[in-house]
Image (spheres, rainbow, N blue to C red):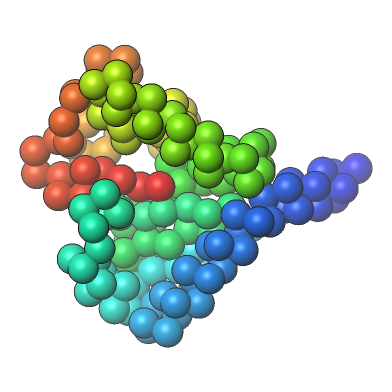
Length: 166
């Protein structure tokens, strides 16, 4: 039964994982390396961070998750962000390909409400909360109150990526 549930979770998230695998292939072409941690492919390093400045600001990230694939700037950073990113993996397992439009809709609703579309996104808040309970730490620029409803309306100073983790 356990194996059947595992197959179902991977299959349900497979369309999003396919997008992640395309990003993984591109990252490998840029010299990144891939590790599999708890059933999740994590790719980082190489020249991935060199293309970062050329991305539109809204696309800046430290790490981003698509299904069972996490792409990050470097493996050390991925180690720190693993609880957060793996919370997103669980969200993909729950919502499947619907996660992408649901995530975008949550961000759009927050933006229309005058809130930060990243920090107030319900899926990000859930991932921050899960990461806090798993690791007992928060992002270095945040406190527990900042991950709650009273999160700042603008990115945290000194956080050049607006803390987009994916």
